[in-house]
Length: 344
Image: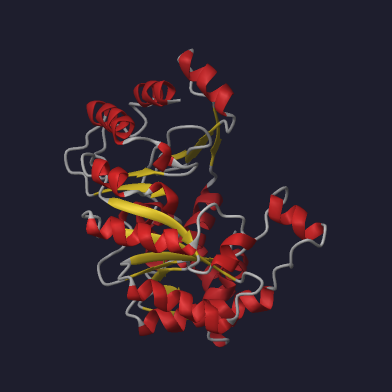
């Protein structure tokens, strides 16, 4: 796999057309299974191939149980300066329900060990809406994170994907189903508690302390071109082309070793590009900029969007100020539905 990734870097050297790279993100699977030497092999290859003289952020996703003191010390010898740790919950009951390999104690140990070894730029994932997670326990989860001085976190309502072990267990009545009403209530509770703790909700699922935005993720929401490497990785040219690699590891390796990137692609229509902008911009605190839409797509589109937005403005789910549409706190619970009603 490492050999194939290194070869794909070379094969994709022209995708970004020489644009400088300022963020790198090692995402799941589980990249914390890689040693620091293996990470450096990939990073050195990237730096040989692309213009990476001013790297601002290099993130590694990690499971809490992988972050031993020895591993963290070795990571300090790589360009990795940010860790995204899959905590999910500080309660063992929730972790057992989600069939996670780690426990709450390991999460706290990993976070403190990371901080003690020079990794102050941390982000964690939290899940709410888990059966058995009462509001008081969810509030305590949020406060526990705040007490650990975590500068950034992402929070998601538990969803049950078809074909997963959890979906099977619920179908066989071996696990409690997810309650959508509970998830909505805990989503509102999250917004309130995060604000009290000094976190800013700058995207539907992402919260940070002042000036601790995730630079890499923010680039996605703002439509910056990006290159994805490895099985299932997605790429975007910043204009109208998306492509994604085959998800099968064996097929990926076989193709790459034959010097062929195994991908599918799509060319986005003008309307699809506008719909994507509406969807991603509405998810952020910066909102949907109608001046940008007028410049890039025309004033007729602006009028249609304002017509579609009017009922949500009246319901106080959207605000319209300085030519920007922005979701209110209650509107954030309906983000996908509101965006789809504004689509062309």
